[in-house]
Image (cartoon, rainbow, N blue to C red; front, side):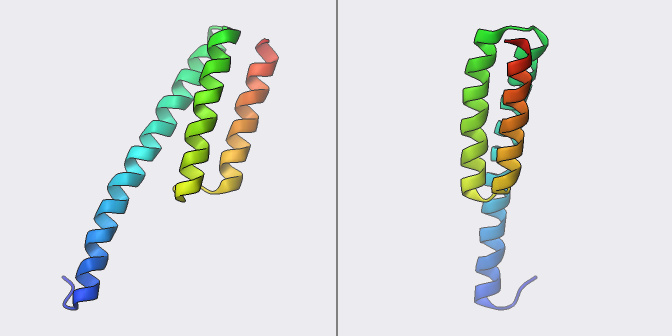
Length: 87
């Protein structure tokens, strides 16, 4: 347990950030799952909507620092390439 006041505050901040990061990662996984389902069903219209949602979630996660910027870019590119194959 921390003894200093600043260390106690840092622990509280870490708990809040940890919970927020878990929520963001869950959103990423959910958006990716819907994207993959649209690709497996070869549904181009649903894929377009899923890609838009997935891209938005990735951009927000990168902005919040949950994932790195290049990771978000790579994942968006791979999803777009998958959609391009079925369209």
